[in-house]
Amino acid sequence: MTQNVSTPRRIAHLDMDMFFAGVELLQYPQLRGLPVVIGGRSGAPEVLPDGSLKFARLSNYVGRGVVTTSTYEARALGVFSAMGLMKSAKLAPDAILLPSHFDAYKHYSRLFKEAVAAIAPHIEDRGIDEIYIDLTDMPEADLMLAQRIKAAVQSATGLSCSICIAPNKLLAKIGSDLDKPDGLTLLDENSIAIRIWPLAVRKINGIGPKATQKLTSLDIKTIGELAATDIRLLQAHFSPSYAQWLLDAAHGRDERPVVTSSEPKSLSRETTFERDLHARHDKEQLGAIFTMLCERVADDLKRKGYVGRTIGIKLRYDDYSIVTRDC
Image 1 (cartoon, rainbow, N blue to C red):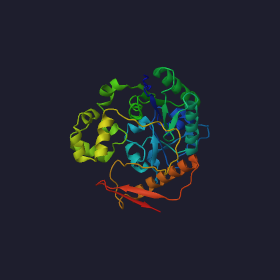
Image 2: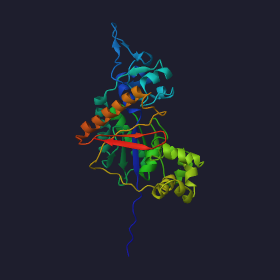
Image 3: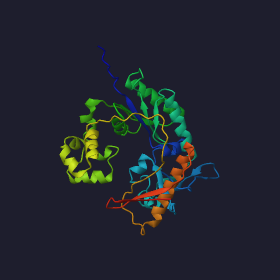
Image 4: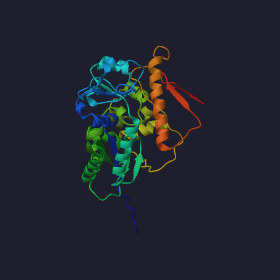
């Protein structure tokens, strides 16, 4: 009689550190350590007669642009992606403003993915700045392999990344954010209670604002509290399938494979606002954010070589009702 023993899965999630901002700082290293905001199409530095550069300040910005990304120093001041630049100027008026350069971001995205693929080719592309990697069949120890991948990314791009190796995609995704920036995190089944359960439930990819609010109303704030919840309580407030998924996720269970190739049926971008925006009163800010999302979808289509037949928009209101319109 023979017995098949499956090899334990080793899945990595690699996330580039403040990717867009990092690419800009390669060109302007003198800005490292300063609050820098990337967004809009204006704001390129002015070359002075002595050859030095004069950078635009966020306080001088006028327009409807939104923040593409920001450095950690700017985030500490409350400036995050998808925020209106005019609003950001009130929080960090002295921050440096640089325009977005999506062609450069796509170039460095290709470089880091090629560097990883040369070491571990089983990659699931999750966007311009993150990937999953199936390392199950790699012979090296996790620590050495993670260090080698990080070094390859640094050598190819000059940028840092954070990586987590875990038994599945769910844990790897959470783990890559634990020790940012330039993080290297290793998780196993024994790590869940120590490193995962103290985190807020929203740290689980798939638990959005609505579910977070509902769980909070049930006095479930951490992943550990969710893991200890009776399934019957969850089923009373969520669909049976989502209730089971919540419990599985809280215990670190996830059987999804790393998908190295797929044919997408749609491409989309979405964002969640820091506050509820009014359709009329905040029309200008909504218009700018909508334009940014359209530009990103267009960039995704171009990068992947696709065209579309239908375009749609999805809106979620403050009561969490959702409407969609397609053309």
